[in-house]
Length: 304
Image (cartoon, rainbow, N blue to C red; front, side, top):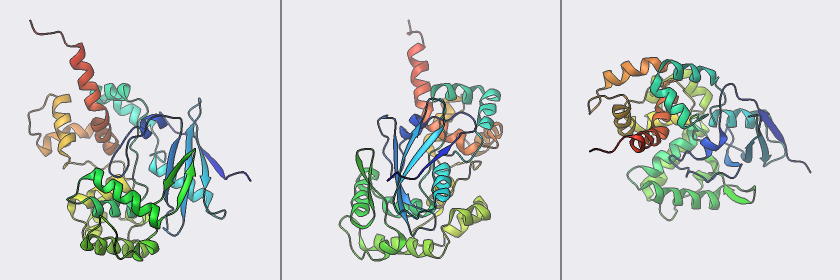
């Protein structure tokens, strides 16, 4: 039986290789092998699916779906598009690189990079609870074990990939090795919020960035930092300026020859040129900034 499949034609430059190589939060960077393996709770959070994503020589993105036969293919396609930032017109980002030489050079270093997102606000919120005040790599392993034990596991292009538990399944977990009791309680709060629709991407997008962050902070364990993470990296807002990311600010200071520490107002002034994709620009700075600085350092003449 043929697996359901879909295609997405990117508007503007897009590189699946760059997306797969971009590690953040719960997701490790993967070595390029022509396929990006995704396993997630479909929006609504009652169904889990796995998707093999490839990009052909013409730039078109193709997805092969594994999971329930009655899963909504249009919904899966839309969520994959959101996760890979393919729901936006990338030609606008090209224009930003044309008017900001630093962004233009970063785009040359990482051609076609768009921000890969968490699979959903629900999974971003769950990661926020798991990773708070814990080493990220340690909690990545815990999340993997939790997903294998209580989520669905898919065979995707020769690898086993586990999807995070649905809210219903997560609520059934009362204890788990590596997750303290207080984090279990907070994960249950996230699951309840997801069941109530408060972690719907569509709902948060309709609210707008600031109201969405305020609402998310009503969930126990989600403070200002993590509400920003969920909104910016889990929901799909493309023009929110993150001002509380020390690494991005430090890189911006070096790239734009600013005094450190960079003041928020100075950063915001530079970022005006990045509208309407300020989030994309900051992700590009974080991802490609070290590569550009390293290349510039290698080309610099040695001191006499």
